[in-house]
Image (cartoon, rainbow, N blue to C red):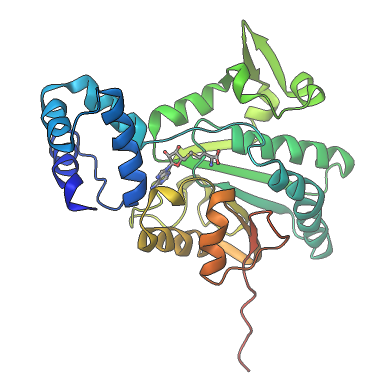
Length: 280
Ligand SMILES: C[S@@+](CC[C@H](N)C(=O)[O-])C[C@H]1O[C@@H](n2cnc3c(N)ncnc32)[C@H](O)[C@@H]1O
C-alpha cells in the first residue's frame, strides 16, 4: 500500500483488526478519496486525525472498503452464456460419462443473488432433463453479515431489475415491498463462511473435497493487488476438475487474459481450466 495511506491502514489494523495491506492501491485510493470528499475535502493527514476521533467514520470507511454490491444476473452476457452454452455442455458431458452430479461454487457470493441466479437457471434446465443429474451449489463469502442476508433471501426491488417477470413469479414471493426467495430455491444453495486468502482450508467445508465443475469468482479480484489476485485464482483453480469453467467479473477479464487464461466465448468472462496432458 502507498505510504500516504499507511497511517490509515495501521489504524484499521490496530483498532478493528482489518488488514488492508493487500488491497489494490487504486481501490484504496478511490475508497478513501470518496470518504475524504464527503468529509469536507479533508487532507489525508486531517482525515487520519478525524478517523482516530470518530468511530462512525471508521465504520463508514470500512463499509466502503468492503464493497459487497451485487444483483441477480449481474452480467447478462455471462449469464446468458451460462444458460445457453456452459450448463447444457456440462450436463451433456456428465450424462455421457454416466456421472451423477454437477458441483458449483460461488466463491464470493455476498448477499446471495449470484448463486440464486444460477439456481434459477439450473432449475429450468432440470425441468427439461428431469431426474438425470443432481446439481450441488456451494456459496461462500468472508463477510458474515452478507452471508446472513443470503440465508434470509429477502431482496429490495433494485436488485431485481434483470430478473424476468416469469422468473420473479416462479421463484419469489412478495414480503411487503421486498422480494423473498422461494424455499425451493433456498434449498438448492448451501451457504458457508470461506476466506479465499486464508491458507487454512483449500475448499469450502460443506463441499468436503471441492472438485467443482463451475466456479464463480466474480467482482472481488479487483479489490486486491496482483499477487493476491493470482493467489486467489490458483486456490480456486486447485478445486476445479479438468475442463471445469471459471467465471469472473467483466472488469476482471483483462487480468485473466494477461495471465494466460483463455476465454470460452469472447467477452463472456467465462474461462476454462486446461486439461493436463498425461505424460507417457
Ligand atoms: C462486489 S461483491 C461480489 C458479489 C458477487 N460475486 C457478484 O459478482 O455480484 C464482492 C464480495 O467478495 C467478498 N470477498 C472479498 N474478499 C474476500 C475473500 N478474501 N474471501 C471471500 N470473499 C471475499 C466480499 O465480502 C464481497 O461480498
